[in-house]
Each structure stands twice: as C-alpha cells, then as structure tokens.
Length: 118
Image 1 (spheres, rainbow, N blue to C red):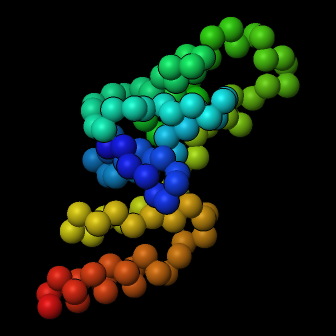
Image 2 (cartoon, rainbow, N blue to C red; image 1 turned 180 degrees about the vertical axis):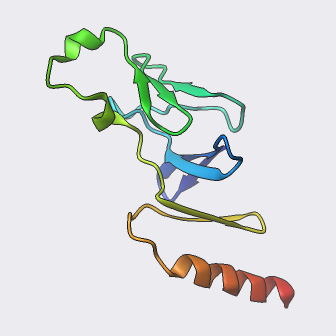
C-alpha cells in the first residue's frame, strides 16, 4: 500500500510472516518512485527508470549491467531504507526509522487504546 509520511513516499508491505513492514518508496539509484499504484500484490519492485529490482523487503536484487559499476560496488549499499520498528494497533501503523527501540511506540498504542475506549 502506497502512503506518505510527511513529504516522504513509503510503501507498507506484508512480509512472509504477515507482519507489516514499511520501506521508502524511492529507488536508491536516482530517487524515482518504485511503485505508483495505490495498492497491489508484488513480490518485487522494479524501478521504471533504470530497471533496478528490489525485493519486497527493500533489498537490491538485481541491476542491468552490474559489471558496469566497478569492482568496489556493493549491492547491499543500495538497499531501500526500511523502518526499523513498526507497530500496528487497531489499524494504526506506528513506526520509527531509528535503530534504537523507542518507548513512545508503546506509549502511543496505550493512548490510542484509551481514546478508542472513551
């Protein structure tokens, strides 16, 4: 599902375990949108600009002419950024890009619970 957080386009994707993951909706090569559809069911994302192929987890899987990038080029350096922490509470998706776990995710879930119960 395609959404935006502020000005940043993101994709909400279910992983193989059915958990919601959030990745940036930008190709790490030239910044083009990876997905323009509002929703769908794809196992891979292909950038329409240069054809870079990413997995649903944002991992760069393939590029056209990979030998053209030189010996120092590392595919792992071009994975699409993924939210490190995602919590889903009654349809609300809360996330953090930081690697350190943030306690406010649980606090927000508790506050939402109070508002819904009210």
